Length: 256
Ligand code: HEC
Ligand code: HEC
Image 1 (cartoon, protein in one colour):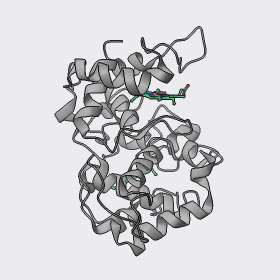
Image 2 (cartoon, rainbow, N blue to C red; image 1 turned 120 degrees about the horizontal axis):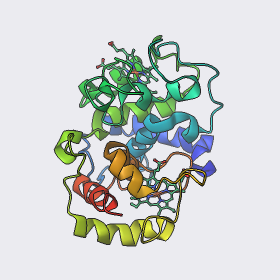
Image 3 (tube, rainbow, N blue to C red; image 1 turned 120 degrees about the vertical axis):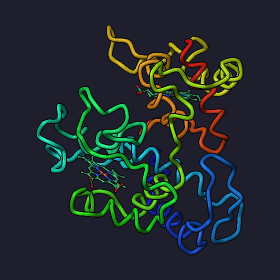
């Protein structure tokens, strides 16, 4: 974790992204990255990595950046909303795990804000998106460093998927191949989460929340975390693989 936060490394990322002109290279939602960095080495930090990092920042930038949590509720969080405090500063809290804001899973319930989603950003120029995140409404200008803003913008432009293609909104069932998902889970996830998915409990006992619980209750969150990783902890991200692979894993996780 701390290695990634190393300022020299962040600068390198900024350099790769601007000097290499990498931001103008079209990036399929979850394909391999053919781009080379400024120095032309294949092992330079890739666009896919930067995009995945942006996905984690969208989830919880405070945890990714190991930043102090802002005091109080976000100024743009509506009075009618049910949340308060630092969690209202997470992008996902206003714009949703399905990126659809008030038109998606947050159209009602305890996460309702009435704020629109970020789907309109797909394919948009990242500089333009950067400008939006830096605006007064968001009040993040002094909280999220430039290089992290760039990654967020990259995620919003190139990393979002149309969740309704992969998760049935009504039944919450992921449209994936459970058998294939099992093989991926057993080889890539079980080492930490256990073959039965019960090795890590995300809640403090006696409460219990496992991979399976998340994927069943909130498959949109599950898919997001499986593609980009869990902020602030050592977990793999499947973003470099095709989207169907991640969906297959969600489908399998719904059975454990
Ligand atoms: C407290 C609520 C809140 C949080 C947290 C929040 N936003 Fe927003 N966001 C808004 C509001 C309000 C708008 C303006 C919506 C409108 O114009 O109707 C907006 C608009 C946007 C838009 C433009 C969408 C469009 O179609 O015009 C983007 C992009 C965006 N936010 C990105 C982010 C990112 C990235 C984060 C996290 C760093 C974030 N937001 C966190 C409230 C929030
Ligand atoms: C190197 C260990 C490791 C690997 C490998 C790993 N994870 Fe995780 N995962 C974690 C840790 C640690 C957490 C956070 C636990 C916590 O917050 O208490 C986590 C969290 C999660 C969460 C989010 C829980 C929440 O808070 O909503 C999901 C979903 C998840 N993992 C699924 C997977 C899947 C699927 C794979 C395989 C593709 C995987 N993980 C691989 C360590 C790992």
